[in-house]
Each structure stands twice: as structure tokens, then as C-alpha cells.
Length: 169
Image (cartoon, rainbow, N blue to C red; front, side):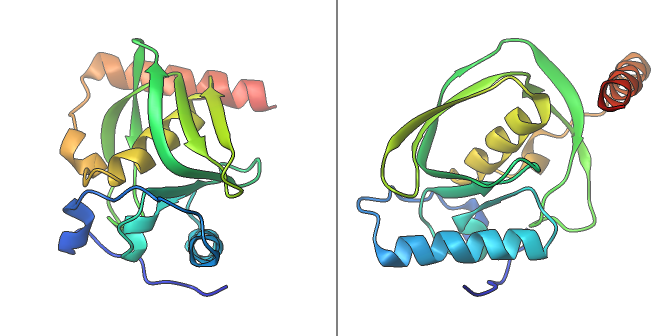
């Protein structure tokens, strides 16, 4: 395993569409392992292959429940109900902004062994991570969706955070 360089927003590769992985090879597995090591080292929760300069449809995510590997992922369902939350990105260091994301997402992808998996996320943070990382595969950054929250929306964000903190205790 090796740390890879995370590309930042000025790098044109981040705006390119990633290509499908046709066959999972030892090189693919090495990429996944390197991506995980790079993500953990950067203290991130998700990383797309394009963020380390590889135009392949590979994503790794770990929101604290163990790593999830998604190869050739596609969202097959998402809730119409969205929420507004602050978001950041390893490729946009030092910046954050508000983005609307679906509360629930279902994604179909291959795992590192090439087996098809369906992952249903009913947890906002995981859903946000999935959407964020999959957009990278199509050359989209979260900064493309930034919104300025209203006073009422900010109150709702604060209320939701309080509820989440109470649930954790």
C-alpha cells in the first residue's frame, strides 16, 4: 500500500468523467488499498479514484463503520426528501459549503471481489458521502451545488444536529 497524492480543485482531471472498470485486476485491488490508506491518512470519509488521478469508477467510503468499496457504482434509487447540510472535500481543502442531498440512497456496485452488491443507506451522513463520491466519477464537485441557506434553514440544521447529538448520547 502507498499514499497517493490527492488532486485539488485546480486540477483538470477532477472535471473528467471516469471510465468503467471492465475487470478487477491486482492493479485495481492495489488502487483500492492505496485509496483507503490515502483517505485515512487525510482523515476523510470518502475518496474517488479520480481524486488520486485515476479515471476509473472506483470509490471508497468509511463513515466509521468500516470501509465500503464501490466499483462501477450507480444510484438506483433515492428519496425525494432532501436535507441541507454542510459539506467539504479532500480535493477542496479548507473550504465548506451547504448542499442539498437526499436523505436515503440505494446504490448498486461491485465489491472488491467483483460481486454485485446493493447498498441501501437510510442514514443521512452515509447517503451524503455516497452522493458526493459518485459525483466525482462524473467530474462534479460539491461546489457546483452550493446554496446559501435561509435563516429558517439554518435553524432547522441546528435543530437536526441537536437531535442527532441527543441520539448519540
